[in-house]
Length: 475
Image 1 (cartoon, rainbow, N blue to C red):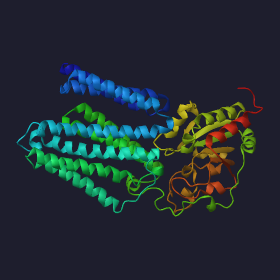
Image 2 (cartoon, one colour; image 1 turned 90 degrees about the vertical axis):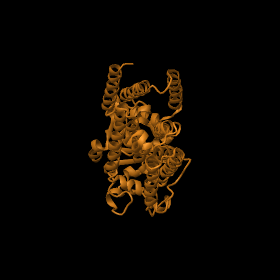
Image 3 (tube, rainbow, N blue to C red; image 1 turned 45 degrees about the vertical axis):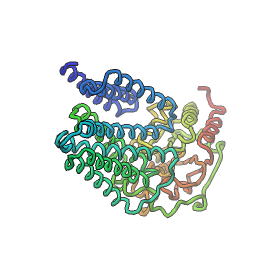
Image 4 (cartoon, rainbow, N blue to C red; image 1 turned 180 degrees about the vertical axis):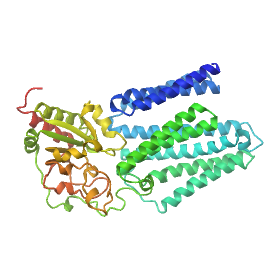
């Protein structure tokens, strides 16, 4: 392939990234945007492999086939509730791939070649630095992402405290980087340099665990977004090491997009990224309250709730992770349709950090083909709760907890919430009065206008739909 063709193909790949990112900004075009970005990445990989000429075409075709089969199997077998786990896994794959490429470059050019000079002389100073950064960021992203997936899956539970965690994390990152740079810059003996690079890998492996282990709950969407950004930065560092402009651009775009999304998620919780990494919702909570913390909770059943909903003119549904866990997305769509046939205006309010990853609720509702026009972000709909006849909260807790506005000492103080308590009537579908991730009591449950509907989200929604549909006009 000539240089001109490679340049044109690289330009096409960059164009696919840019257009794809633009289309990802809207729910309706997100699917095609994702496809365009994937196509751009595939083109970038092919161009890089061809340009480098390091691998036989048969190995390239074989690698693409194996990767495609693994990717298809992972996604086809995944449920909507498992999407956060899949995203975490893909972040880990990205970090590991970048680190492995950087390690392979060091091994081929320095160790296997039996170089007599330090790696910085063989590879060049800039490449040596970026090789170290790629390994540090990539391996940290890998172990952090794997741990995040295990926490999301429930295999690793809780938010264990690590004494002097901030200092430990700093020592691991700084010490690992120092070892890697020392091996690449100061040592001419390849084997001794390899030992120090191995130290960099080991420190990075532990750093990923230390970074993610104490974080959980409402902070998980931020962590997933941050790890996505780190995987992009690792790829960009690898691009510098390989002197591959396309990989630099692609990695930088992924890293920047992840950082922007991380910042958006932090603003949604009115917290800084440092506070998320160092702290963690629930860490200082004195509650962990159960039913004994509540004194005046009113509960009802589907029949009575349906009578209120039937007479409403407007209803807002607030989904949380509980709706995904109960696989109630199709049931909530049926309820919305039943209410719609009675002339009720139905909308869905989406909190930015609802669920386990950015956009999780959008993905869950999209699986049930809930119309995009019915989905509203917090900033668009919060002012409408005061003029709404009824709100149905399904499996959400902390994102509707008024303590964020009324209790300055609360762990969620200052976090913007969906102000559902301003509606005329609030129905909360929940299995029990157990606290959410923040581990604190939710005063909404004791409000005069709140009625609890205890039970599995899907079962309660099915019962509500049956009651609402009874005697309604045919759809």
